[in-house]
Amino acid sequence: MIDIENKVLNDVFAAVRSAFPGTQCYGEYVAVPAAFPCVCIYEASNSTYRRSQDTDLQEHQANLMYECNVYSDKATGKKTEARSIAKLVDETMQDMKFTRTFFQPLPNLDRTIYRITLRWEAVAGEPIVTDSGNVTYQMYRE
Image (cartoon, rainbow, N blue to C red; front, side):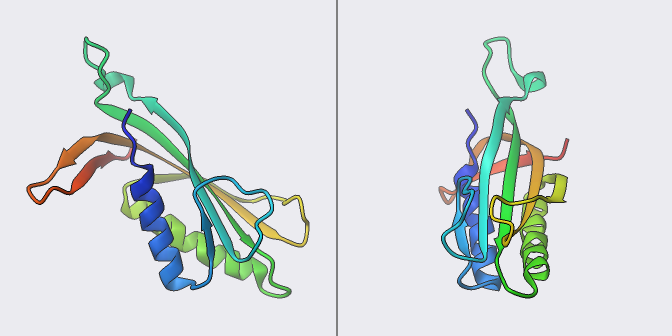
């Protein structure tokens, strides 16, 4: 299985924490965050990209889908705050060659919390180890 979740989470969390210090970041779905603002991003789907599977059924590329929920509970300006954070997450994901397939404010369990849900998709290739020992992945927009 091609697994780039750590890279995605590290890149998104670094961008968010740099631009919005104090933002809580989680790599899983959280229905009601304990602190705000909050970003929850996780790999919602990882399946073999069948067109690149060889005759031995080895996976060479994977279809990936990530979902993100951005939450804000500010008394005033929560929509603006959530949209600003969502825009930064989207830019970070697009820099990694993901295509946004969904962006929508959705009602939250607690109606005082503003929530935006986003989704992205991409095809990731097998890991490539560079001369310096770092691991990178070839990413493709579908």
